[in-house]
Image (cartoon, rainbow, N blue to C red; front, side):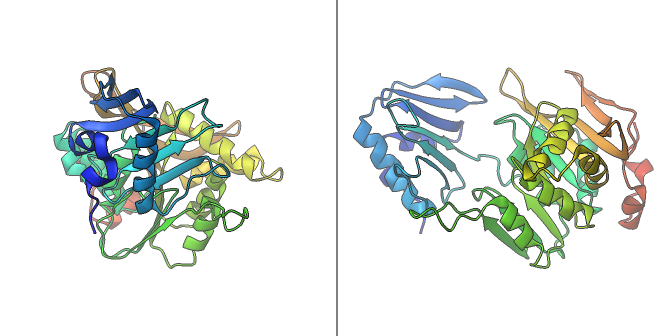
Amino acid sequence: MELDLDITFGAIAPFMSDPTIEEIWINSPERIFIARAGKSELTNLLLTSEEVRNIVERALMWGGRRLDLSHPFVDARLPDGSRLHVAIPEITAQHWAVNIRKHLMRSMSLNDLVNRRVMSPQIGKALTYSVQAGLNILVSGGTQAGKTTLLNALAGAIPRTERLVTIEEVFELSPQLPDVVQLQTRSANLQGEGEIPLRRLIKESLRMRPSRIIVGEVREAEALDLLIALNSGLPGMGTLHANSPRDAIIKLQTLPLLAGENISHKFIAPTVASAIDLIVHVSLDSQGFRRIKEVAALTGRYENDRAEVETLWLWNGNEYERGIGAPPHPDKFMAIGAPLTQWWSG
């Protein structure tokens, strides 16, 4: 059964059906915003508090999530791939805060993103071969920079003979592969029991015979479980909020410390250096244009408890400049018949 926008979203249905609108958020019934091309606009739509609640309640019927005083936050996926987030008083000061993020480009391939100038054809080919070769890739960037869209496109380059397991807080990825298992976290029930966090899902995924795993977003101590899985030879990918590839590595070395006092930087640094191969950093510029800003590689070396990162390509504002970095694991590219001299030079 498909989502009926008019019935579910009522007065904001026109915003949901408008393909140019990326996100809708309600700060109060009288202040409703939308985003187009990365820029926010205040609409002239006025609702009542009851209308806002009715919209949320109808939308949550599809997500299988609940919202009440004991669970004042909710994060849910809608059937069209949009992501709904709601916070209610007393977490918010007075009104329900509602965000609906629409994934307009969620089903695009790497070639589609090349055609939209998100990256150069050379980078598109490099990333395609990197995925096929089984490199471990981390996508970094800020909010709304396009991390999930790029991760979904990278997943589309996975060989169709592989078995993929995805792990997410809320279902957002839509990999078009024949052998896929998608896992999603679960909140605790009214008795405070039954919660299933990302860490548990990553551990369970390793028992499901994956050829590759994808973690939708690394936020906390699950970074440790992901690193351990990748360091065991299982290829994988994921996203991380960060301002640059180097910041992403610093964060990836810090988050595992949340797993317990027995985890140290001296253990994490070499683990990160050997587990991650590429970092693809995406950004949203002042004009609302999303682009890969930098592609960097980890050399496998580390110094002063810090994994070494080298730039492969960097956007200078007009074009991509080739950095000093070398593609990691050339043997893996040769194994899939992708000689580096044909597509990585320049």
